[in-house]
Image 1 (cartoon, rainbow, N blue to C red):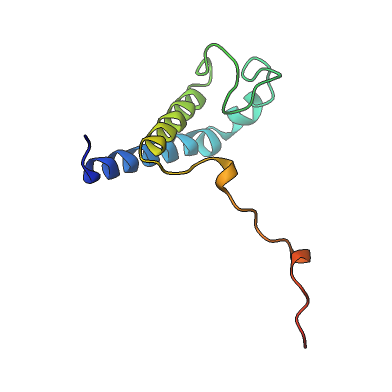
Image 2: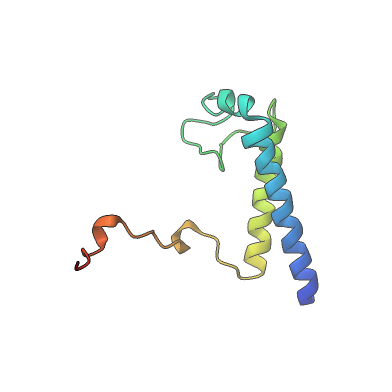
Amino acid sequence: MHRPSENIRELEEAISNFIISFEGVFDHDWDMTKNCITDDCFIRDNGTFIQPGVSDESNNWWNRGSLLSAYRHLIEVLDKNNIPHSAECIQPLPRPQDFEPSEP
């Protein structure tokens, strides 16, 4: 069984690796990302960025494969520690029309 400090360290490393990989794809490798994101060779018609539906997620786009691996590992660590992460957990922000006008 993992001690809490081990779980925290594993979570910190998973978050750090994800951020490093995210910056690789969406900052350092941005020109490649813009070109690849619309190419059917990198994401199938029924795929998404996270689930591209291709056999080799790193082929000619190593940073994307690294990001997907870091993302999936982070999800595993969150699940192992019972930390919610699904988009269903996110509460939508209130819209301006949801507020009643204030009295002057």
